[in-house]
Length: 630
Image (tube, rainbow, N blue to C red):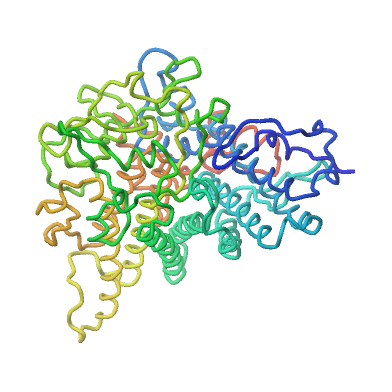
């Protein structure tokens, strides 16, 4: 008689009502008395464990690891210095930020992700058996359930691939102690291909939308799977060892999945079937000029101060029109709190004490902007005083020498600031109790995919397709006009991809820079001037990367973007230069280590190596550990 080994360790926290995860106990037998044949009997049993897949991503450090893996190693984050343990970056995070990463660092722990994967494997394993017993689990509901579980499993494995590269991979649940789970690491490319094939087979089994609008972002939908597939194809295509044909196809698959989402959101805007008032909330200029439906950012007041409306909807309230998939937290006292984000960035504990682990690098804005002229230099990420993201992501302080306060997610809204003129001000430069979320307000979402992210994934893919179509396009090049030119068709095809990529980037940029939409010095410009339109492909690559940097800052994307570029180029020169820039003087040991491709990935945790004799450490860390012991 098999007993459930660890599936229900956290199922007692899996009650799901609407879009809110609530902590409440289920009436279960003691763990050692829950036997398989007594549990998997009806649809409700399946629903409970499927809910555990979602709750597992809200609890046990899942989000904090996503922040550590996707942000802390990047150029966005700096060590917080000062007094008070709750205001200073913990040592384990300091070591990562400073490039001193070892296998005994708790950031290497992947337990929260494999726990969710095991929930998913269990649902996928048992749901078909339950469907044969309970007619309430109809074929369509079963297919939808399987699609949700497979998508969540793929998402968790995708995080692990991007973070550790080669990982233990299984689609079988851990049920009892008779199973052997001493798995060797499977090549990341092999796992990625298996996950893509899995999602391609089930993507249209997921719901298009739910009866509750908030559920459309809190649960897996077709759009969520399309976004995940786009991201996975973008990662697949970045493998420098792939042949050009396979790269182009993977990039095109990314573009195609993005288009499914973009078309859906445009139709949603046009129809507004949910009665969300989208005709007034979506930016009319962006839609009219570029055809994309992005929320309007700029709102003013009678005294000239600004309110960032899109920010407040996306990061403050959550479940916004632009959200594709996010982890949603409830607002009741007994609801799960998003303390992972709150503590990492700018939050309070249950006693009202500040808990802030991370700071924003001062390299993000080294000096107060003094001109509205656009520059595409990575050294000046916010070159204009018009960009709303320069006041919604962090609090610029000209006296700061080591870090700025992070305000993205931490602030429910951003208002009362001056922008678009020479008296540019980020508003409240000191973070007080009245500005950040209190503990009871820590229901900020953790956004995994949103509309502008999808747009910029498509832009990146289309620039790379243009490079593959016409590799000679490395300097200013006019669109093909002479059909007798032997390269006419390739130039025309490449130009089409570049123009579309430029439109995608321009739409995202202009949403956050409304004052520059008709400026002859603006970039990317709506006015139709060409002097500032980037025509060369290296410039377009930089444009896309910088726009993703500005738009998705502190959302767990930046480090993965840098790794993806390194994979594409087959070297770490760019990522090394970018990350080293946040050090006053980059440690020589760090520069040497970052020259090795494998050092971009995390080491396997020391505890995992001890528990699993078949798991072999990442070579660069194994050699470092060996050297340190000699």
